Length: 126
Image (cartoon, rainbow, N blue to C red; front, side, top):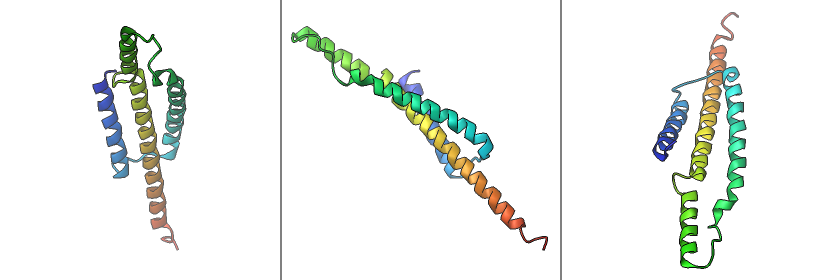
């Protein structure tokens, strides 16, 4: 995916969280839990991949000459710019986390609405 596509997906995840917070959608716990579990598995896998990218923290040692320094700097920039694998993993992590959080919020709101509705009917038959 391009950097622009990742930004658009990230914005959509932001909107999903905002929608859940405002009550724009609700979902049962039974429907949300398997999706949340899957999202958490992917969040963990993305975390492992991010941790393995420590070699991108520093420019590679390509010699003390001007050309080696320029190539090393270029390689480091490419490994860390907005189109890099590192940036894509950061965006993916944010998207997965926000999607999980939105489902948690929506599920909680559904549960609260259910409990409120049941509370309204309690005592009516007495």
